[in-house]
Length: 458
Image 1: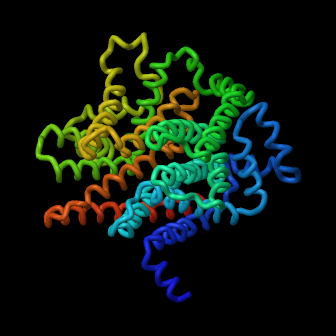
Image 2 (image 1 turned 180 degrees about the vertical axis):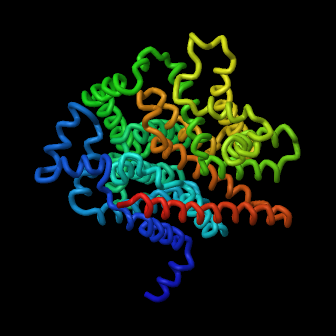
Image 3 (image 1 turned 90 degrees about the vertical axis):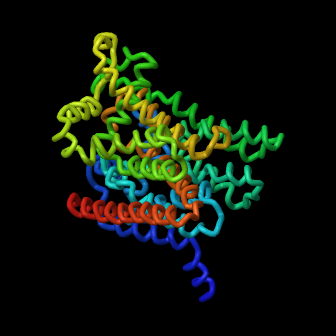
């Protein structure tokens, strides 16, 4: 037993244990009894969970599995939610490591960097509709969705799936597939890799077919839910009266500007760290000025318009007006205002940033084929852009950025593993500085989240 404990402490899994303990340290101070948490808790007090959740399928939401779990957990104990929430964040870390961290001599260090990057995510965003309601509707589907993708990796690598793992992957997919954004991600990912595995192996694993059918059924369940249609019409009337007048291009434009507006307005630290790591890699490996300028566009966007705003505004006053324009919660370009080029700037600005990131990832991995980082980035970006097709695109706020944020965390760890391959002495110094920035940011963010929780709890 002593040898096993010592072996575990020396392994990379100690980083995941640390993540679990740190999450418990945050969640233990939270009592999920406000906002939507209070509504759900009061609605199931003194009666069965299903008697409340079941009818909502017909008048409000298709999230029957998620809301059943939410109400059941709240009804049992807040400590059950605390435990599962910490486990879910750890599950997300485990799944990312399983899917994207390479098995080499730097594995433990890469696990530590991954945990640091996860801790950089501002977990207090999961309080926007109540801690339990927001985490169970977003964090848990994200974590279980990542876990349900592990079979793809195992089948792709020819690794055997143990018999007891099959039901875990099925349950994870069913839970994640009950949330609209994660369902769209899993549907697209499973469909893509079903085709790729057939092309690679000239056959398909039966379990992939099972998962395909389950996620298709989940998508149909969401699309045919009468409650979703009622909810959409209610939200259009209350939040976005002109929504039905928008074209598909309008909605894509709204998704772009709303996403970039949130990044700039809130100073998205995950976007900043990812952009910085990508730019550092480009500067370490390319001398061409054009490549370096491309990599710096996102860095200057986030640091210039957000973090260094005061100093830049003093020198260039109209940059403040630019930020105000970028973060406006409205349709930026319409037939009525298209003659004013100023209204085109937010769309061009958002598109330019995302295109520059994609081009930088192409430079890092040299080609489009087998470029996992670009695929992950595009999937994450798409999960946020589809919010442009929802009338609550502005009301939903930062919580709907979760899937995109974690896709950027994944891209960061993928690029980091490429960055540390360089063994030159000067490169090592740069790597150490970048590592310090990431870990220091993680520590500061953890303290920030803890203070926020202590300050806002009753």
